[in-house]
Length: 328
Ligand code: NDP
Ligand code: GDR
Image 1 (cartoon, rainbow, N blue to C red):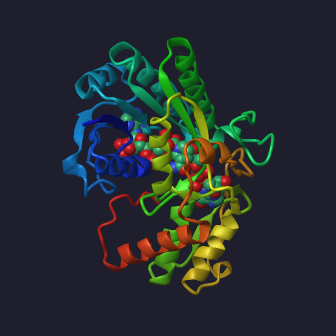
Image 2: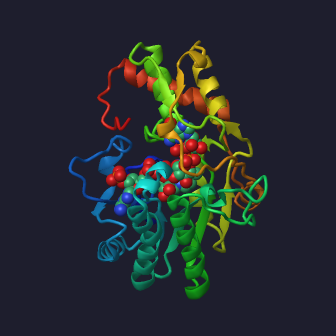
């Protein structure tokens, strides 16, 4: 039986990846940090099948202990302060978790289990002020936020450990990916949750920031398979994962509102509070390397993704499920 250690299991990707690994017969060790109230919304259904280990990415000793306990064949580092907006308000915490946390994990692996295979959750945000369209593995980076600067550090440390210590360390440069398990503060889920509430008469308006930025949005369930495929190759490498389509926030809004028969212009209010000090205007990925070498391809397109998320939020609010992650 293969063993995997996964960080960030309570988040969107960690929940899909854990499900995926369990289905393939893995024993899955899940790192969780201490919180005042446990939040298992995304993993309630598999919680008892996971081996939980207490630890924090910013605490090297806890990671050493985690690698000792799990003795993993594969390690997936998905944990991070992942919200770009917050990274301007908490640049140090973001640097420690999202950047230095990667070095902590790499060190723990180097010391305890250097032949384990390692996946690092890198991001299209590293392309920032883009140098070319579409973006591919060779496109130069230009991070535009404390979050993406921290991620770029983690990205290069992963490459550094691969080249310095011959570790099987891979970086997935993943473009935005969404799902019904997306945190409520990210724009896609904020929109689908807002649309569902407006449709059900629970909310009158939806306040958003920049509607012009464009993202390459895919489905998280598809993207976790790419993470696993990267660790099954003969050689470690870095790969872009994307859909090859880009849409503006405005298009996402239009698609979500029109799906429930509403005109978005009657409800959306632009609000300065949600504008960013620096914006990433256009992301569009070229994932031909992953398609060719990993045999990976998306299964959900933009429209189907928006509809899936709206359907989920309508259903959740209709059955009045307790909303435990109501951040916004
Ligand atoms: P989420 O924000 O949904 O999940 C983040 C996870 O990290 C949570 O489980 C959180 O735990 C955990 N975490 C945060 N800080 C720490 C810490 N100090 N120690 C241990 N655990 C911690 O992110 P996603 O699932 O969306 O993304 C997964 C990874 O992929 C992230 O690294 C993100 O930056 C990256 N990424 C995401 C993309 C996307 O579009 N979703 C695209 C490209 C990269 P808790 O529940 O306790 O908060
Ligand atoms: P992003 O995702 O920054 O791309 O990072 P987010 O959904 O937060 O923003 C996408 C775009 O929407 C614009 N926007 C708003 N964003 C939010 N959150 N709230 C609003 O009200 C709003 N109005 C407009 C933003 O300005 C931006 O242009 C996500 C995260 O998952 C990262 O961890 C990951 O690395 C990248 O995707 C790829």
